[in-house]
Length: 140
Image (cartoon, rainbow, N blue to C red; front, side, top):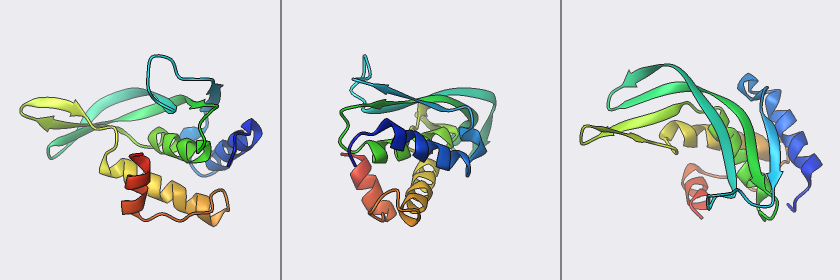
């Protein structure tokens, strides 16, 4: 799907009807995202105390906005990826006595898969993903 800001905003509005945590989120379309090599970014703030689960810990997050790159040829997929970040807690994993950020945790990919299934069922995208294929596509 080529870039169309109205379509992108309609997709976000659709998901706001499903995920209440997206309510404050708005879209910023940029020619490029400065100081990164990213094509998309979700601005998140963490809050509350860490909750510990085995070697992992997480905090709740609140998303403020999603930045997308206008030249992204797969902007809808990128938007779905960033929506997944917006609904996924902030995770860290303990490695050699040090806490390391886990941006793409198992919970993130579970959410991303659910987001893409909803998108496919509602004809937002025309491809259905398995978890393996979704991870492979996301790594590109």
